[in-house]
Image (cartoon, rainbow, N blue to C red; front, side):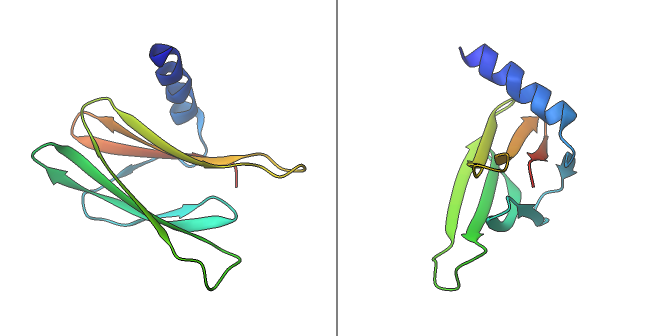
Length: 108
């Protein structure tokens, strides 16, 4: 099952319109439609530490959500926002490829 998930995610990363390589400590904007934010990564002894901060675009009072994960070689983490009845879901994935992080988004 894990191999199937990684294969599917690999296809998303390869075909996503918003695919890019991140640089350490450099912010990258995230736009998941109703949720926006930024992400960056740092190089740590345990792996590459990805920090993403997200907040709803429609609310001025909502508390932002911060997600922190450390990726070992070839690991992937993704975030998604469900689609509405009329729209598609949006997602962003961070994949560690050797000593670099690739980010790819789909949807909005």
